[in-house]
Length: 211
Image (cartoon, rainbow, N blue to C red; front, side, top):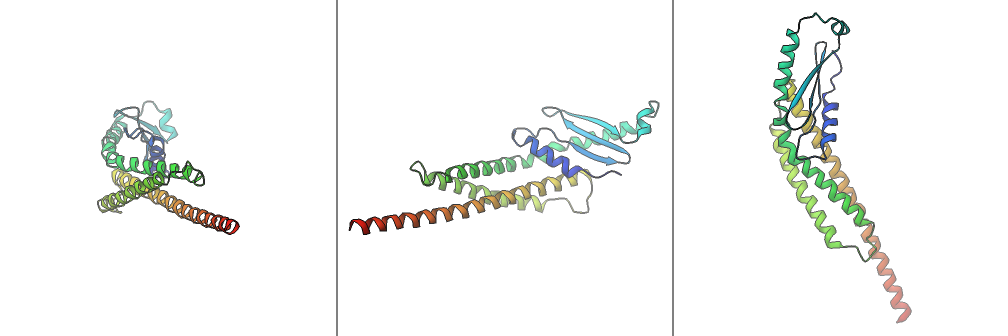
């Protein structure tokens, strides 16, 4: 049996489609069943196409082999494929919120470069920070809800593995993103304090010179 590449392919699919939040986009599932590799792909909209790639070299050259096993396998994968949207749709808003946190963080990073300029808008920075804080709290609550309803760890069905892979992948993305957010805030606070000390020294010298 080949290496199970479901986590790798599912993560690749999510990364590919993160820019289009209105659609679940293309989802590749590489599921090994005996010597047959199944590949499902969303070719657009909600219409799924399914193909079977045999890993047995003898079956590729034997055109007279029975198609009945393949038909049963295709039907099985079609059944799984029909559940893909049901699995992905509940996470659509979560992916949108993660993208929004990342966009806000990028904007705050750009603004932090101009903290010494008159164009710097502290209120706008605070607003972005508060937005990320609200989104973070919402996501933590939603992830806790999803975790409570995950399939049992000893459930190795395709649907259960997809749900666990999707949950843990997005949850780790959230953790990494939130770590970056906290690190930015620490650096920003340090920079602001440094600027305040510098301005205080300048004012003090000014008063000493002209008093």
